[in-house]
Figure 1 (cartoon, rainbow, N blue to C red):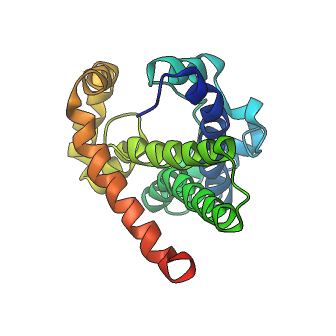
Figure 2: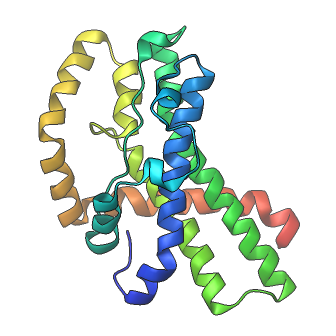
Length: 208
């Protein structure tokens, strides 16, 4: 998912920070908009990276391709429609990453057409795109405590949802297995390809 070279680590740092901050801020903003002010009271309704980034999680993400940000705490009891609104809050993070990836692609194409892109800026923008797409796909995996699992729990009947939540005790082990095997590539490669196809289909009339 992420590169290991020193150049990629340095150039990828802005992309990783942006992906983490945008993702968590979108969760917080959506929760507050739907009536739960818990994120605001906990200081998470901000784009300040300090409020969202877990330093150890960021370092782990840079070095071993697996990391984390500070999760945004919400109280679904404050929502008017708890099941629907929890789904919306969960989807807000991955969707914000896709929007950020799309905007970075637009900037890359504009600067390329203007002849203003440099090798350094090209690499930074490419990594912003890649990391945000990667964040979106990864967080939509239906495995606790990822966003995809929150969506699935709310869609399942309550008895099945309770059984599914019990998987959380094994989630770290499952994630390690996924990261150490080619299993994730069977998810990431087709999903990333589809996302790029959608992006370029939207942009083709303007740039191609």
